[in-house]
Image 1: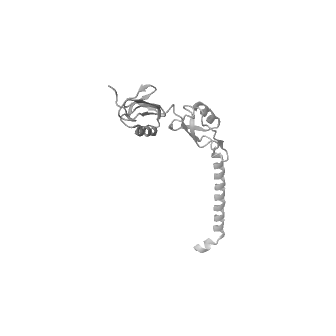
Image 2: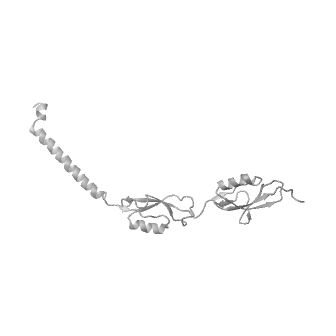
Length: 186
């Protein structure tokens, strides 16, 4: 039998038909299995976790069949309580599968400490932006007799004289003692 005669024979068409039926049945069975295995159409709604403590978050996620994954803490945000959630991914209200990891960013216990720059013998005009760039605040300004007008002589935090290498939390208030441009009296 030649190849061309085989391609137009009943046997060939029966084999092709059986192969098509087998593929359709196999696809149907695979889709049916996948639908059950992946819980197709079953979703959990992500709750809003911002501002809540870790223990409350854990209970809410357990109730919704979700898993908590804590990421590194971010910069301190004074609008949220310490050790509470300040960001979450996926966002609140998102539809996800059960046992999905919800990534959380926590609020640290406070501002991180930064080394106070040594600004003595610098002008107030140089010192103020330097402090503000490090997120410190300039507090009370007092003057002493010194020939250098507006020259930083001393720096204080809550009445304590600051020395080279001291560390303070961000947003700390630093009081400055400046020269008034008058010669000191002997």
